[in-house]
Image (cartoon, rainbow, N blue to C red):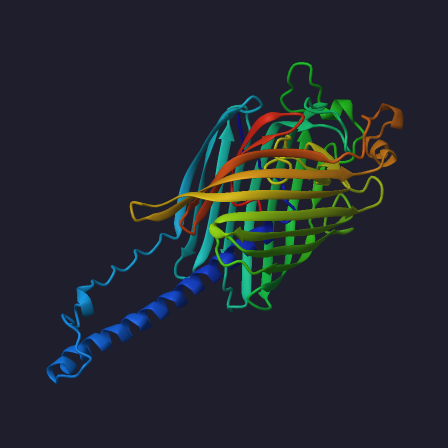
Length: 442
């Protein structure tokens, strides 16, 4: 079965900016390589022009068959490479028991002239009412080569959002309850490039969530009915302010093979600003890619974690640190585990399988992938009881075990424009969850 969720990634803005920075660096490196190649060809051409003259003069440097149009030895100059398209578009088609038939479309253009903007559009819908629309616009040179700007607007709705309780519990694979989840989100971020590898980003966002009973399944109660005192059970508004530091030294955008990517971020939801809740979130995310023998094989390691600093009953459950889904624990349902902090690590082996040109529009690269994931969330039983509004004796039991998942998949890169990722994850709760999303895991 296929699943394409709209996960609320707390560092999604930073990932988008890093993607644009990487693409710009790759384009610059390619341009520099082209200039060096042009200089070499110019020098070879000048040498070829001189060769006939030296031959007439009887010099020992005579080269047969050399002309300005035809280099020495009769070798033909290779044709100039076709410029790669900056845009790509891909459909999404799938089926899940929760959503039924579902589909959508993804469009990305990295060079909207004359300002060279990046536009990222995603839209999807399902027969059972799930809907997602996301628009991102990025300026890689906002009035200056050192400034970046990102603006995003998103709407997401799911009438059967699953709730598995709080903490590192053994409730799954069956959910405790479901509810309708609806999110309106917008953000504006401004980044400053301190160097080719470092950047700082400041952002502000508007985030409003509405939760209601939704479409109830047989024998599955409403979250609002089962946990009427759960913090955030009716939704609410949060307008976070964030500051982050980015480090990235990778050279390719579509298929990076070496280098670091590190994000450190602090997010404040203060009193005032129309906020219904109050908390601070700290996020640290780092990964490293290393080519094995050839760049055809790549080993990737990722380590990430979050911590939410808040007083009791001041942070809504849907903003808790989560694990489960396409980005961290593949093989578990989205938001399977919720806590006030988490830690996760991922290991991937990628092998390039195919590399070909699609009608001279895109250079397509297809990688095969195997992966392993491990992680857990943290929250005390007393805190769970307080947030649920129930006695400790009635909450699902938790443990200190790490959760593991594994699987395989493929990465399909269309030039430098877009990467489609298909992963099949396995865990002790689910066998063969399929995720179709865009962009690399890390």
